[in-house]
Image (tube, rainbow, N blue to C red; front, side, top):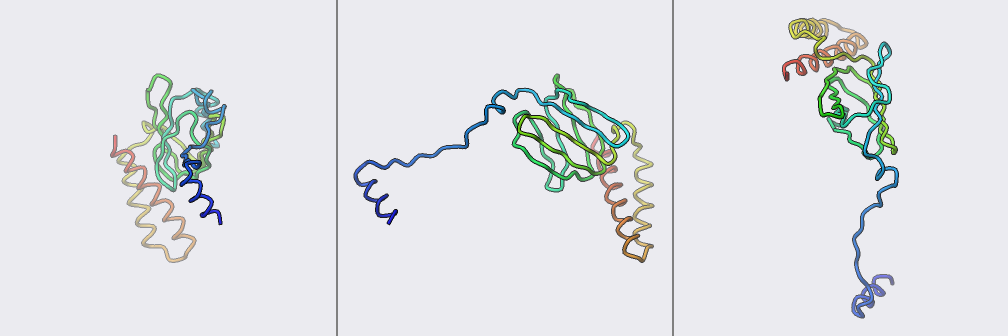
Length: 166
């Protein structure tokens, strides 16, 4: 029935198709800065700091967060978090896992299980740890030990990859 009405409205010139987008919230329009909090259980790296952009590795891929980003909650995977200060200077951190929350008011909270700046990591030690973790994975027989070794292998691979990209 509605299809017939639409067809009649089209023939009479009354009906106009319109395409529109979701309205931008007033909070998003006002958000030109992003409040960023980044911490681990042992250290607070940023607490409500104003930053330009944050790039985060998640289980669904790496994505950048800018002011007025759509709200989201993501799980972090091992990789590099890059924080761009207001002047555009990047600071890189390696995170093992955690979560990132982006709120509608342009505030972002990143909680990492472990986090270190890249300059604190050594590529030779990372490769040695990767080889040991791979050896442990191959030599273990019970499922719990295999799962733990697999997590170590994934984290060590991410560290080595992060350091090779420098």
